[in-house]
Amino acid sequence: MDRADGWNRFADAGRAILVGGAIIAPLWRKDIRSGLNALTAVLAVSAGSKAIKAFWTEPRPNGQNNNSFPSQHAADCFAAATVLRRKWTNGAGPAAIGLATAVSLARVISGKHHLADVVAGAGLGVLAGEFAADYRSPLSEPE
Image (tube, rainbow, N blue to C red):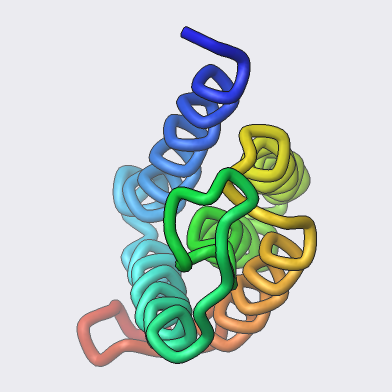
């Protein structure tokens, strides 16, 4: 395994842990609303990022394809981390933002994205997370 592959695996694992944790951990604590907020944020930013990628073809630094902009990893991670930061006050939020940042930087180091790609993805993720953190699903419990 070369260095780029190692960073890429780290980014994949970090995204899975962060997104999965942001959805499952609140449900485990019977905080259905926060789990649905995280799911809403990730689904929304994923759809938005894929739509942008369909129209904005930017070559990846490693030349693999033209799907560099925006970074889906950064968008997903920052959407989940933003909901955690907004909903949980036990220190999970800053740790989640730190992991989202590490995943995003790993995508640059591995040659999958330019810095602008991860900055744009992070911005989209934060926007989705901020909006979704306030969303009240009809499926969630009343206050």
